[in-house]
Length: 353
Image (cartoon, rainbow, N blue to C red; front, side):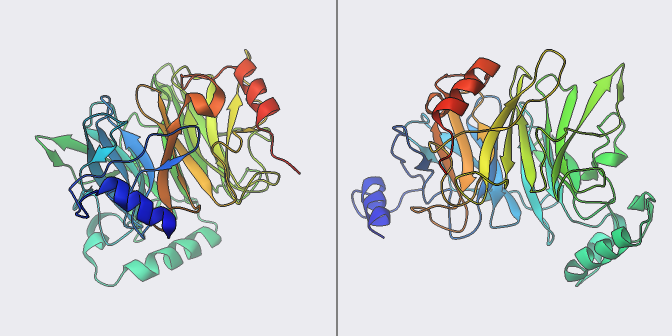
């Protein structure tokens, strides 16, 4: 409570709220983005346009919001979040937004049905039950043609912005040229490499090592390869998700619930060798990870600010967005991290116990 009073006094010296809130600059430890962005609900999974001035994120537990930076990042003033509304936000769950650099293409995860079922009243509570029953039945049929809509428990969807208006979202499997992400199982946490030739996502499909595993597909000669599990160096019997590739494609940041971390979920990094094999995950250490959940890594386009969502003391709700200077995470001011840097992280930030 004392922390909240101090933060409120810092942001509002006259005792009055403003449309923006100034957040103290990070000095080695994570900083909460403040009460304009964070609320008693879940705020998570930030994603930015190319200029770093517009942030899309999961808000209100199961919606997608947008907020804009006023001034510099260090000043920390953000406009009040605006829910995107229809056709993107719906009575169903819309989370894990990924905006492209131009700000006109938005990927997100949803459990929404497809087609005419969108307008069926009181359907929401029954969608997961129906989809679970479909998975248990063992059917591998493309369910976009069936009454359930979508392909599985969660799917990746995409919407395009034209003249300031977002299009009706489409299931990624219905769009030619997109990677083969969706299945009759739960598929979520989708990201593309900077060059657009690699896709990473989380799935509960068979062939994995645990509940949620990281999978990948590559675009070769204009065609996407079959989904491939990243293997036991990355995936465990626990849950691995939210895999974010660095711009140079050499490293992957992953959230995991594996044993040996600082809390329930921690953020890790892996690098791959010259043969393309991913190495063992390395914990980012106590500068980021705490005793609660720390997950969904992200960074600003200039690679100076590292963001993640967390459940920790000093927050405003169950899950908040926090940030820290990226150089305080691994000693380098760039989001590209080499194998040598990974070794340094392993040596200096290894969890105790």
